[in-house]
Image (cartoon, rainbow, N blue to C red):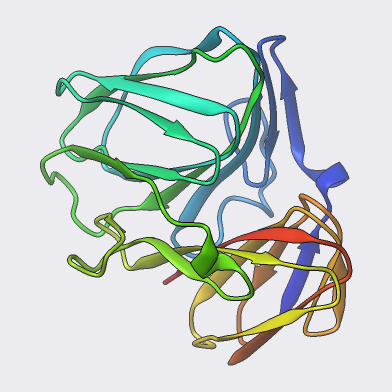
Length: 230
């Protein structure tokens, strides 16, 4: 099954400093048909104005992944962690027993990012945060692992059976991803692609399950973010 959730159909909230599109029910946007996808609970497509951001607020028992598309985001939390994550890189936070954090765009330009939440497999675990830069070259024409539930695999670690992957496809090229039909995949491209022959446009959500092979063909240059979850 491949279900295209068009960008125009996503939930929308414009707070002035924050222009957010919600792939799944979030805050004041509620759609009983879009409560999540497998263990994926939130996928927000956020545009954050320069010199603004999310003030301190609490979370618990959720795995939170931030993929920065442009600009940068600066994180600080009640554990004493602080760090800046730039475009193309990822930060993760396991909220665990509870953590308060803030996310600010301290840049002189707008920041765009995906905020992805995944249900935890370790309730009441100690909270943790991490970020790391990733080389871009491994993403050219193939998926690069950015975060996972497996320690010591060269990626960031979360407390969930999930893979977060990024790739870059040039127009006219394709890549193949071997999938488990029992799992839930969610893909968002930055340009026009076809997934097993089904067309999707920039910033559409592509919900996939029941497929053992995913062929992604780029009709325009596209960056891809894929989550493979239980």
